[in-house]
Image 1 (cartoon, rainbow, N blue to C red):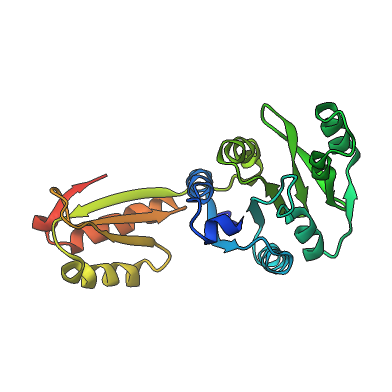
Image 2: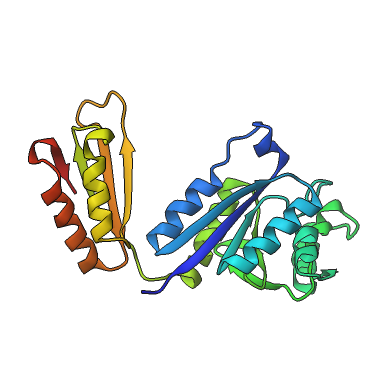
Length: 242
């Protein structure tokens, strides 16, 4: 089965200080999972060149794709492009196509917004849905803005290139707590070590106490593991299955 790994790097002091609540990672996680991408890391770093550059460089080496969020505007703290350039040992240069697009928007070529035409040397542009401003890509790093409405449009336009074999999922809801069913979960995993098994307690829920999710890219393997776990669990604790 094909495995495509990904990391998300969220950039911004406003996230680390609690001034805003990030929604981009949550959105990206759901979208990527639906196309079979294995998200392996979510990192939040401040608006500082070295932390951004170090995190991007580390993730670019470890994972197939890196998606950054934030720090690509015209202000003093928008330093993601420069940091990505440092991560790859590149210079920051003016991209002629971005300069043209921005020039149509800013009458004054000295406008602060023209800063957004600067990208790492060797970067390429990807069309971004209905947006006029394309997404900048350097190697396996895709540099997206932090504004959720724009981030979501840009990410959706890129998803086709990340698609991998899909995940299949089954769900079991139990009326018993984790301490009661833990032994059965361990037995199932011993027999099916490649199964992605999640156990999620729910406090004061009227219908169930634990939600179990079983995932695999091998549908037949998942079916066998699912049936095995159902056999292991006492029938009286199984509330419903999906």
